[in-house]
Image (cartoon, rainbow, N blue to C red; front, side):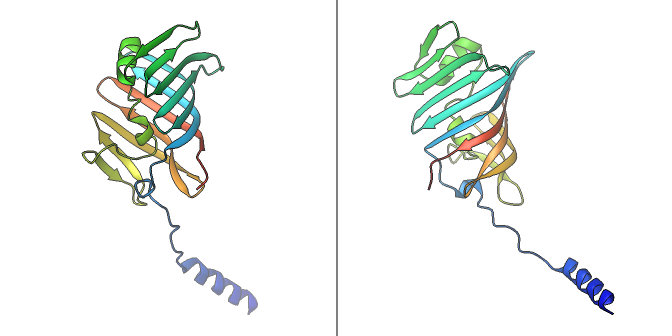
Length: 188
C-alpha cells in the first residue's frame, strides 16, 4: 500500500505546475553607465578575419578596448573619450581621429560600430527607430539599427541583471562576434 501511495504522489507531483522564474528583460533594465567586459572577439570583412581576446572598460562616455591574440599578445588598444579616439599598436604607433568610426575606417578599411557598442552589448537600442524582436521570456532576440543587425544568442545573470553572453553583429560589409565570458558591473 505504501508503494502505491508513493507512486501516486510521484505521479501527481509530476503534474504540478511551477511558476516561471521572473526574468527582468534587458530593455526594462537601466542602461549601465559603467561596466567591464572580458571575452572573445571575432571580426570578418570579406575574405579577411581576426579572432582574439577582448578586455573592455566603459565608464560614462569613455571606453578602453584592449585586443589580444588568442595567445595573449597585444594587438591594439583603442581609447575613446571626449577628446576623440586613439589607436595604439604594439609597435607604439598611435593613430588619432575625431570619432571611432573614422578611426576604424582609416586604419582597418571598414567601420566598426564602436559608438553603438555600449548600448548594443547591453541589449539596448540607441534610439526609438530600432527594430526589435523579443524571445518568449522577454529578452531581446534581435535588434536592427543604423544598418546593423544584432543577434543575442545567450544571456547570463549578472547580479539581478540579465546581460548578453553571446552577441553577433553584422552589416553589409562586416561580421562581428562577441562572446562575453565575464561582466563586471557596479553594485546597485
